[in-house]
Image 1 (cartoon, helix red, strand yellow):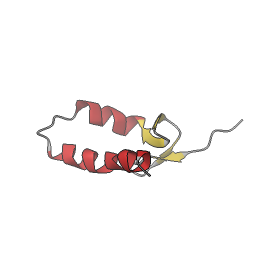
Image 2 (spheres, rainbow, N blue to C red; image 1 turned 60 degrees about the vertical axis):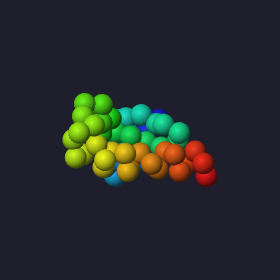
Image 3 (cartoon, one colour; image 1 turned 90 degrees about the vertical axis):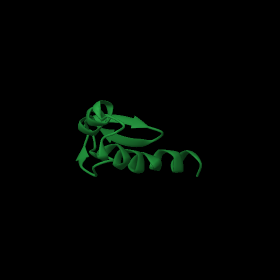
Image 4 (cartoon, one colour; image 1 turned 90 degrees about the horizontal axis):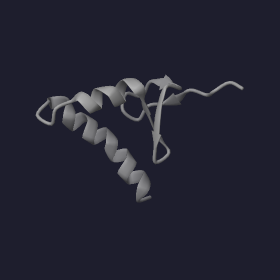
Length: 60
């Protein structure tokens, strides 16, 4: 059985390597980068903005 590629909600890349949270997919690369990003890093706010899609999906 072939697995379908899914688009990451953070970077938009299509892959089948990652995790699904609240029916939204996050690729392994983005997951690892988010985990090691410090709150003072400029990229932190980018990740928060992208992850808002999870909260919107929960409340929809």
